[in-house]
Image (tube, rainbow, N blue to C red; front, side, top):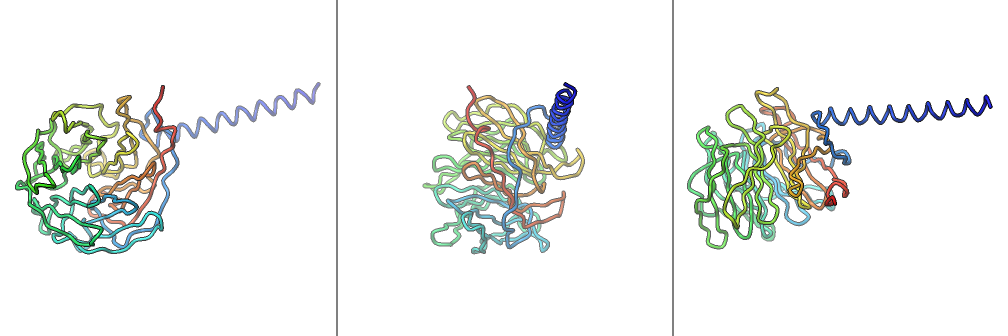
Length: 337
């Protein structure tokens, strides 16, 4: 009887210890993700092959099995350099440089081509240039400029049109939207956003463009707006948990994910927290924090995998050649009943 009671005590102690460890892990995840009670489980971020250039304030887009990273700021200043990462082989190669070097560009892929709009040129002036890279030929083309110059904007592609949204001009944040018709090679004005902002990010699901965060002066924003290209109007959505700017976003599996950024007046550091939005449930949830928090980075997705490319590990003039990824678990993407 005494031996049996002893075994029971051992088993109970082990169970209590396991519960205690689980509680510590849960608290640690909660703290790492900003103290949210709605932390979503996911695998951790892992490294891939570093790129050929060390940069920040870049633009990135994916075409098929390749990620294209262009422009940005480096130790030598604004650059026109461009590189391509092949996902299948975990390898990089350098491609033709852009005709116009820019940092803080807006970049998107559409129908097999990469489009680069706006940004700051060497010297700090904004540009209205629209540049296109064709992976099939390896050539860049300069297209019709938009007219109003801007930098640190969002660029979204829907049904043969590009939407240049927000950004900065002469140091002031914008609400304006310009729409480029690819087939006609022409621009027109679109409905303005409700909130003026720069250093903003966006993601596209179907005909819906989601615009996230950004900044006004030194104040980071948590504002989220959605534009339906068919209905032509903006709608306010639930805010980000973490106000952020200088970050990027990607859309996949009917979700939008926000990655990276930098705090300004809030604390002068880069942001590790990662958030994912479920439009059906109208809720943001946290995923695993970044392995290396960065601002001025590129973010793209393929399947359930999200890639964070280059960017500055510290606020201001910091650079890196890092490429890291996160695989989001299927159960976090499946619709709940």
